[in-house]
Image (tube, rainbow over all chains, first blue to last red; front, side):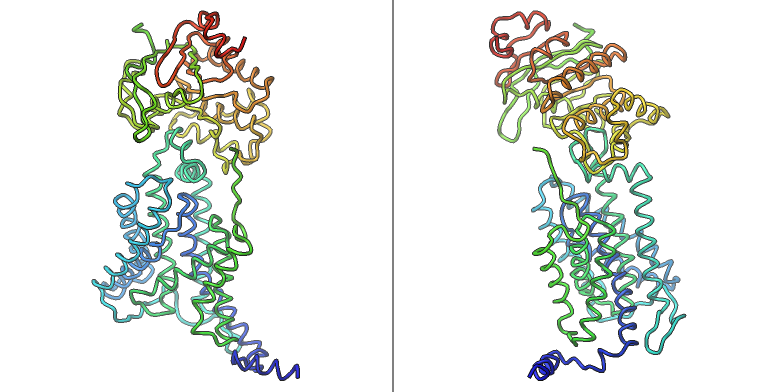
Amino acid sequence: MATDGLASLLGVFDISLDKLSNGELWLAQFFRGLSDGATYASVALALVMIYKSTGFINFAQGSLALLGVYLVYVFSVEQGLPVAVAVVCAMVASAAVAAFVERVFIRPFPPDHVLPLVIVTLGLLLIIDSAVGIVWGFRTRSLPSMFPRGAPIEWGIAQLTWRTIGNLGTVFAVVGLLYLLLSRTKTGLAFRAVSSNLESARLVGIRVGPTLGFGWALAAAIGTLGGALVVPDLLLEPSIMLRVLIFSLAAAALGGLDSMVGAVLGGLVVGLARNLLVTFLDLSELALATAVAVILVVLLVRPTGLFGSTRVERV
Amino acid sequence: MSADYLEVRGLKAAYGDIRVLHGIDFSVAEGQIAVILGANGAGKTTTLRALCAMVAVEGSIRLAGEELAGRRTADIVRRGVAHVPQGRGTFPDLSVDENLLAGAFVRTDGQVRADAERWYEAFPVLGERRSQAAGSLSGGEQQMLAIARALMLRPTLLLLDEPSLGLAPMITRSLFEQLTAINAEAGTTMLVVEQNAALALGVADRAYVLEAGEVALSGPAGELAADDNVRRAYLGY
């Protein structure tokens, strides 16, 4: 009776015991999960940077990254630059676009009124995604990766590819550089001061607007880098970053929204969860739903995420 | 009166449609301490905020003869005006040491580190907690940190909004002793909003009483302390 029940349950999810006992498959999906997770983590880092400094989620973050990824395509495939050079150029360009967008669409609003700002970022999402569609069309393209093909380490079907290693290395390097920037430089001090207490930041002479504009530029560059890591595994088309954004949102929520370390670990967990669920429960149609489920569970069980800070304020 | 370091004429300020200041005049001579007294809602905090362009203003604000009205907060700070806002003047997520460095944000001289050490000496409790997050300090310690943070600017004009708020009487007294010492030593001009009128009048050179957004009374602090109306309304005896 019990085995019947188990069998039918496994049947519903199309789980085969062969799959579950296949160690190489586990390892293969583990590596893929880490690789995907690193890309979600990069975009999650960008979300966390804006959330930390302004207290709202920039829904246009994925769209700025989308624009950046199309620029990578232009620079590398159309102009023939080496992919890594194309990525750096696209990061600079998307930072410039983000600084412009922040100056024109964000700064006119008072920084402590979050709701109008969130609506504006939603509007920007729609505008930028549509603009990309108009300019480059809706046909799918493939984007080359910065990293070479092949895998230096293999166990049967489980491969630790250069791409996985590159994705992980890149995201850890970004976190390290961000940490140094924020903790060791005057710009970083200004950024953290604005995040911590807007009014006192003004009163020590920090120019709040340009500081937040710098945050937008930096976040867009990081988001573009994240896009350049993730898109080669998928196909480039104008809605691609919206899907990535949802996984990255889940990663950021899991990490606590205001923690950079949390964003990275959250990204890795979401990447692993997605790949394992899709492979072993055969839930490929529900992959996005797993991200939404993560967001829901985090909000219900632990609203501050794994590493988020609970703000205690004197009144 | 031309030697006044801070000279304010016809200062008006409003939050949206609600006018809080109806054209006030006051001045503080160089190196002196002035205190603003008044009931809740009289416009004391708004007056200090107006001086730092934290609220939209009309009228004239002259600092050492230079017009500040119409300038931005960041520029006013660069002219040596430090403001300790009421209650939350620190960066709670930054360490005590980073709070002091942030206070010196606009300075480009090489004395910042030495100044921080100086204030750690003046406020030893901050020195013991320099790598601790400011948000983890007690209310009194945070208030000291907010003041030390403001002094890191090497201000020529220090604005203090209710420095005694939430502090134990003994700590308040030693804080005011520190402030008078700094005033005597560095010649820092100070403008203080304070509920503890007896204490404030004791250290101030000049006093202004605000009522409903207008200056109701002004004069040397000693004279106001002896005024019957002031005594009844603010000193409580």
